[in-house]
Length: 256
Ligand code: MN3
Image (cartoon, rainbow, N blue to C red):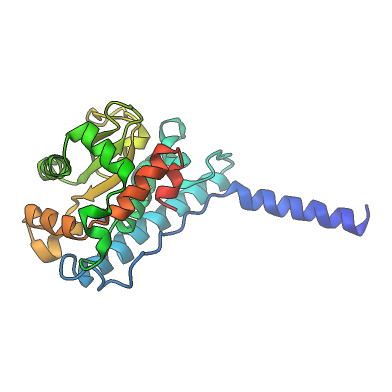
């Protein structure tokens, strides 16, 4: 075997090994630091939420994937979105890891990327794109109706979970509101031991985290006060971009 041939075989082996293991990175914050969302979301909450909880989901997911692939599992998912969508077909214990830690990684990437500082024009409803506005009108008549329904759904979640504005793919009602417990995500479909998902398999374009870690340091038990603050730092520009990506099937762009 020539040197060149040996060298290219080695390259192939190395790239196959690199492909075999999916490594998820934490999404970068699209604003400057943990102080950027004050006073709506305080720096200590951001530090704990982004730097500890979200970082933990990513770390634990990568460790679980590394363990499973080291044990001989041939993982076909090439990104975080295809991984969480495939959760029902994964073997134990990876299925539980992907559901909890992978869901946590996906949900928090969407969450932090959709926010903007309170003085940023992106938070004005005038930043809503024409296609998103049309979808909201078809599904809820007005933006105010939609935000009221989503706030109400988020307020009613018992314990930890998420409220979602979700792209359905239905031309007559392109958007729906749904909730999931823990770190479940509508992209996972209807999970066997979970409460019925009203719009299973839809693509979240806006997510409200109602775990206590998202608000307890500042608001204590007052979840409605947190929900008020949340809307003041929600970037409609980001949600518009999420809608465009969801509607064109570029779902992993929501969390990459
Ligand atoms: Mn959280």
